[in-house]
Structures are given as structure tokens and as C-alpha cells.
Length: 261
Image 1 (spheres, rainbow, N blue to C red):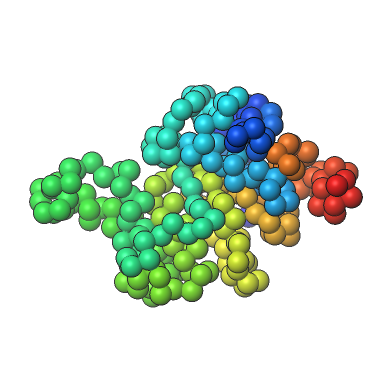
Image 2 (image 1 turned 45 degrees about the vertical axis):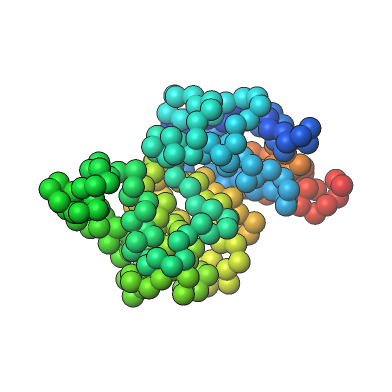
């Protein structure tokens, strides 16, 4: 298979510092993400990984530094505005609608793309009916891609955890993000589920051309699927490079093996 072409910097994180009541969650963190790459953020528990994702997608506003996406800086943007710009996100604790079917959960990811007003949507009249048909077709393609056709009408709350994670990924893909932030997509999964999810992440990156930023605890997975890895420890950056460079970095080794603390 031809190696995907990794492009120019699409997302730039510059000197981000974030603190809560005097406690530093992130201190002067900088790294970039190139188009079409899989970029992993790793580190021990409490390293600041989720805080970093929250700064990128507008949940938190850092006290210092800025995030630039395709040359546009966003200081004070909320998650909806960031999503409209083209940055999608999955969550560590599944934020799915448990009583709704798989297809309806994934459809919620299309809300950003729906142009007709609520009244027309509710009555499914005029252009709204045609538009909904088009969005449903898009969602059906995602369902096929994620191999969850058998569960289309099943309420998400009745699915096993691994499949719920897949629905969460599907909902994020429904936004058609240029950059997809994955917050521990393999957490709580068994080996087989992890292998499946790794394959989907690689396929999303490869077939859809989506740039992926990934937080993951499973080092084997990270080293297998990432193009570059940034390492955080206690809110500071201690490593950044290819999987091999990071694997051989003394600071990273001691942070993970605990010799520095």
C-alpha cells in the first residue's frame, strides 16, 4: 500500500499554559499536527492530556498561548464554533444518547451540516425532506464503514461497550471533521476490540484522509499506528518525535518507569 502523503502543518499549538486555582495543568506546551498524520499525545495519568484536547476543541480557554487551525487562531471559541471550523471529537466518557438508536445517535453528528430550519425538519417538508435523505445516506455509509449495520435500530444503551465506542466514533465522523480528536478510544477494551478500533482509526486516516490526534494509554497501540508522538508529564512536554525517537528518549523512559519521581 502506498504511504499516505503527510502534508503541511494544519494545527499549531503554541505555548499553551492552563491552570485551575493556582494548580498548573499545562505549562508552556507547543507542538504541531500535520495534515493526514496520526499524532498521539501520551503520558502517565494526570499528565494533562485531556486538558490539552479540551484547549484544542474550545472546552477550556488557556491563560497563555494559542491554538491555530489552518492559519486561523482561536482564542475564546466554544466547542460548537471549533466543530464548525472542522475539528471533531470523541469523549473518554461516552456522551451518547443511550435511549436513542445507533442511526439516530450518528445523525446528531450531522446537525452542523443541516441547513433547513427546525420547523421544516420537524414536518419534513420541502427541501428539508430531501436534505434529510442525503444526510441519512451519509450516515448509512458510516454505519457500513464501521460494520455496525446489524445494530442500526438498536438503542445504544443496549450495546456492549466496544460497540458504543464505535458509535461514538461514527458520530464524530458524521461531522466530516478535517481533524479528529480521539480521547482514549481504546480505554476499557479487550485485545480484540482494541485491534478493531486501531484498524478503524487507520482506515479513517487513510480512506477519509482525516487528520487524527489521539490520546491513548496503550503504548503498543500508540507505537503501532502513530506517525509522531508528543509526551506530557505533570503538564510539561518531555518528548516529541517519531515513535522510535520517543521510545528511546531517557526522560520518557524515566517518566513511565517512575525513576524520575
